Image (cartoon, helix red, strand yellow):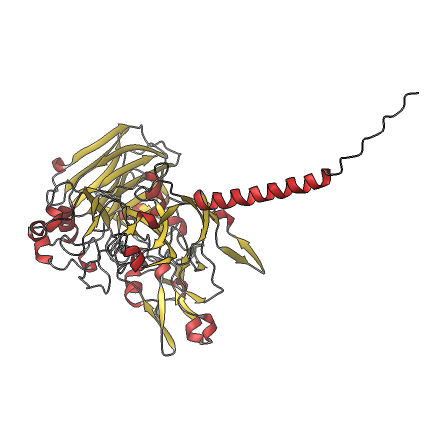
Length: 561
């Protein structure tokens, strides 16, 4: 019978070797983690609403009783103060407000009907989004325009700020009608440049900065969507909800051929041509964020504290088109703004985008900028159509694919004068107030019976050019051709918050701290030495409270553009 070999006893120092190996692995893991955090990726928490709604700081969240619409509002008071007035206020669902213009002027008042209001109480505030930031590494990974960046505050480098990068080294930046214009420059403009007609905006080389498609999609701000129409637009026999789209008869079309304009799926039942026009009086297209609905204590009540709003000309019109009974003969989307009319037309199997000046309404004045063969919009199927007018460019999407695209080029002076209707010379040394900017006027045309699904309107990100009251004409940095210029030297950057009306950014930053001043960085400029990295992912959104158990909003995990 074979003998079982005896097991050898482990060496006396094996246990010590195992501990030493484990300890070394832990040390290496910690070292790698610190290196990873220092040079590759670091986590941050958003503290304020300067980037809302792209990124949320501390906030409250509400849900419309009639619409199911969910929106966020920045904190307006301190619930620990013990004052009933400081903890309770009436707010308005942005998808059902019957007079947003009055809301912006007066706030929610007792005269507003209960179906159009939410009695809100300051709840436990939700923390801001938690984000991951990819560190900038010279040569390998450097800042690009429209990145969402984290950096050290030039006025107090102990603070981290997060904004969107708008200006790059070696260029002059101009903010005109909410958009960014730049020109390359190696030195500051001369006195003669400042004193000439149009100031620095009359110099050569200006181009508009256009956002990439991903960033543009991320910053569209919804104004209205029919999927958020109230379930019951009539209360106690009174129609309290006034939808923003109005039927207009053209070419003999009947207004009565529209059904459900106050509902979620408007339908045109007639065979002729018809038009839906946006009601800009009741639903002004302005750069208002529900997040900024603020209130301040005045005795025993809270008074509204609304920032000024500018008319916005860059918008997106979108809908799902379902022809009924037959292929749709014609479908068109229009945007009137800045003295011009822009349109996307789908007709006879082709799609085209066009523009014309409004002072020449002859049909021959249309200029076709791009076109493509796409086939008819088929009956019985829902085809998604989007028409964008943003950053002096036109985009047409059909069925989720971009089928036409075109750009037009205006310089800062032409853009300013078309947007405000004012000559630039007459404004120096001030700039046009918020009330001078006219909003866009969209419309939809179609011929034949069709249903419209998810009919919506969104506005673009808008960088305000004045700060103060509605009639203020004091320009912020970069918004005037001769005052408070934004000229960036090598290693200098210019940043703006997406929540433009409530953001302390390069437009308004004060003089830098003494340490930052040694980097030759003037007020409003972020030196490259203070740039940390690009925010790219929300890994832990704000916690939602559904009953007694707090639940992270994992449905809002997202990449940042």
